[in-house]
Image 1 (cartoon, helix red, strand yellow):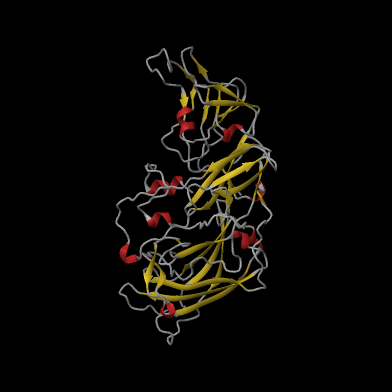
Image 2: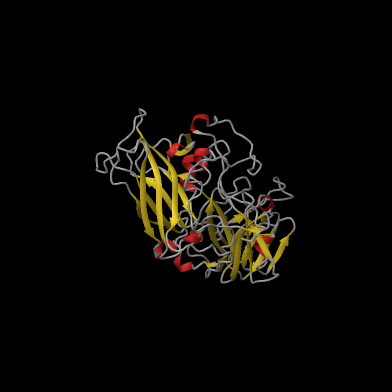
Length: 468
């Protein structure tokens, strides 16, 4: 059996029914084998709890199940054993670890199998997608109840490529946390880095096991951690010579020399093969309060392929760039909506190479309830390079400080798309600095202490299908 990167309607687990197994295990010609196991070498973190067994039979020599390699690889297995084909009683067979047994009455099947049987229990899986720029040691701490009660810590998954800045900064990649818990329970969670609460910019949610075995559990997520709702843009001038805080919808992003008003640096798109490709930034969703008004301002320069200045007229022949917000609900099968917030009526000829873009928007109910809100630039013809500087998205009404104890956001299953404390660590949920466009490294891999030295072997095309 295998783990997967997603569930939903794309991957629905495996169903094993009315099968017979013989000659697996000690005393056979295959010593050390077992009838069933989970591949430990492809760990995409999600094991679909819709996987079920029923009507299995085994000869006297056969070892039924061995989850030890999978458990040692960090895979949280959950198999619906409908008729006690594998365990001592009907229920779920799960990895014998704290993540799977803390909140459910489970009995170890055997030390050799690394499996526990949970009587009359149904497990469901909720996935949480957060910024891909968050550190690998970010943890999701889950509790049942408040105070000094047992908890579990879950790690996220993102196929980070140290040698590939283009891949790592694509806006559709996220770090995913798969939360598998007993159905119908009520749980609390918060994101933690170095024992301090942090907020990972946004949290998209989806039930991976659509039409699962029982009612959904509830999960309230604390929104603690530093933030600034008076100014939503991070690193809007690139004067640190880095792309911290910035993604791209496709085509790439870099820092280039020369900014508006004589500054040193600015942000540039790279290979824009389509007019929809461009620079983007995720906004802190805690700031998306319905009715709040924000103003967008940015300096814009447009460059043709031959290096000349592209002059837009905002018609079908030479369209000017636009800035839009994408609001997303869900993560595996997301529902997106778009809202243009910044335009340029025409290109002013008396301002030199740089022009200005402005716009305002009022946070809608749709944006306030979204899992993520992405600001991005598009519409300029393909192959025109879009260079941005002095980007701000400022609160227009009376400023109010970010609450340090904002009420947790409950996960409402029916709304999903299937449908600072002073000692907070100095954490930025954004990548470390990258070289400028003229000095990007070659494809030689480099070591990153936060990333495993062995990454899954999978093609980009395959990832488009299997990943988010």
